[in-house]
Length: 347
Image (tube, rainbow, N blue to C red):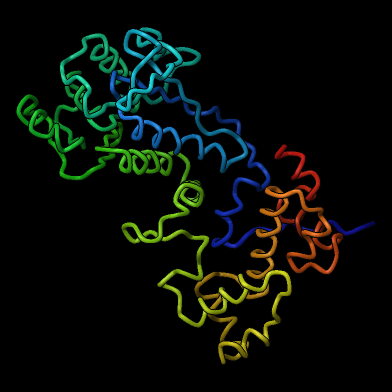
């Protein structure tokens, strides 16, 4: 009887990079239902940043985590702040708070030119949602309708600085936060596009954990080098918290995918002993040099496989595998499917 090998798992530095392509973790949970109320002249950037976080969350897990629906106040045609008409899925009166299809989260999308006057039907809806313990949110100045509904009384909120004076003057029981984002137990508010993304990531982390958020950042933040101390986890060779010698080793590995260097060759380049190198990898990357090198090569192979029309055998050679059979075996151990099956799944 042939031996069945145990599935391989990526170490933490490359796990997030590959999370969207790993075998599904089976769950009986239904996607969390999110509703976005689009006010006339809502901020397109803030809205799309929030939605992008949800869509990407679904991409990094095989089973969808969220579904979302958009609502216009009186019409399904809503004009954004950049003059583009958006077709909302439904109108405000069709929001469901109970029964099958009921929303779990309701977010009001504001913008620089959104009306600050109360819209009673929206206030009534927000009051009803708060009574049913729904999570409520506001983008840009979406906190203003929340304040009109009274759901912010005794709480803090974040909103665009241009609206601070209005809220402070008209709603004495609401504390305006100096921060661009504020995440309370059931109230989420943000002041603009960047903070809208961070607000949604904070919510996703609360609901689905830090691993999911790291995987989302891996996709959405690939062009961010330094921002509030965050650096893309896939670029370990650029991480300033890692010793220079280890970063040099990682760059050497990244530059030598087709013809991998041996551990002794790597040791000669940085003038360190093999044992010292192994300690560096274990301490800072929680893996061994050979294991990290294999994960780096299989990640490169996955990208070539799904983004090019190169043959499996050519990809195997380009990524330093001795044969296409060996490559296919390693690929299946990591991703649960053969290279050809992975290519078919991605269309």
